[in-house]
Length: 175
Image 1 (tube, rainbow, N blue to C red):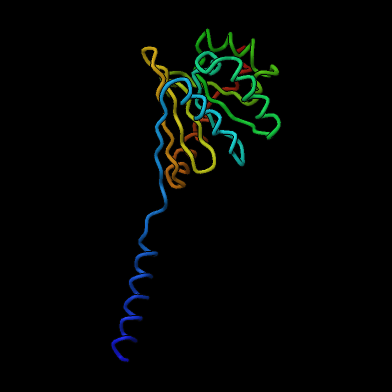
Image 2: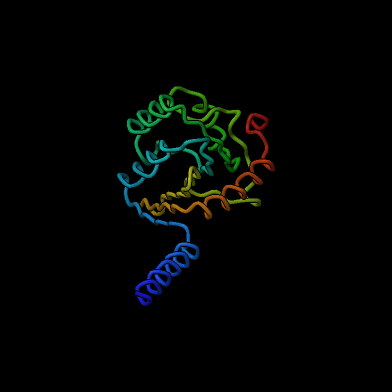
């Protein structure tokens, strides 16, 4: 009887140690091709708050405008907003003038800020929302992306984004 009592106490102690030292859950998902990029972008619709974005601008060009318009429409239905950091390249600013705030754009001009490439070189699209950090790139004609689902990693990256956002120039000042 004493051994059973001792074993129960040891088991409870081990459970306590296991739960107290367990690292937070984490997942990594990889995406490839146009379908993968579409899924990664669509996943941002799960955001419970504002999506923080580093953008080379022009998502529609590598996922297709038909898809992108349906994505934007769904964003409006779900009331998803975003803050976007861009590099103020000529073609990016021209595209922002044309598309930002349009019915097929999720981003409003007042939600876009610019940072020079010397401060941060933005390539592809990076999304931060909920507990997710996601990136998608178009390199040499090939689309690759990934998501890291980790509360601690996302919080760290979000604090960096917030610092850079405060440093950024409202894009409306550049148009």
